[in-house]
Length: 136
Ligand SMILES: [Fe+2]
Ligand SMILES: [Fe+2]
Image (cartoon, rainbow, N blue to C red; front, side):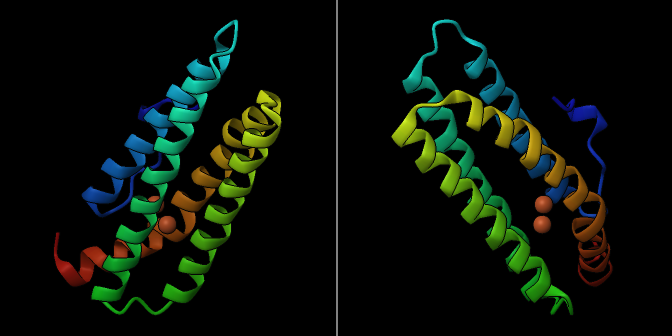
């Protein structure tokens, strides 16, 4: 799992705060999944927190992009939508199967790797543009 301190920083402070919160929730999910015996309700709870936070995370960036008319907004937004749908699919798979391995593999593997890459590419470029046009 990634440490908050090793998260790539972007040029717009509010986005960094949200990214740190997201990592905290991923760490919370990891602890929940590591419990033996597994507490299904606790995993449910962290997953719904994570989904809710991701929705806010993405819509917040989309609102900022709209405010400054960021040229690559559609591409960035499309990537958010793709990942949010993927997360929802994994959560409903979990609700049907209660298989923690799929949750672990996706959230602590695929999604975590995606998040790091997304922050260093799309979020970095977007934050630079926002900072330039909003001056914060
Ligand atoms: Fe982001
Ligand atoms: Fe983003």
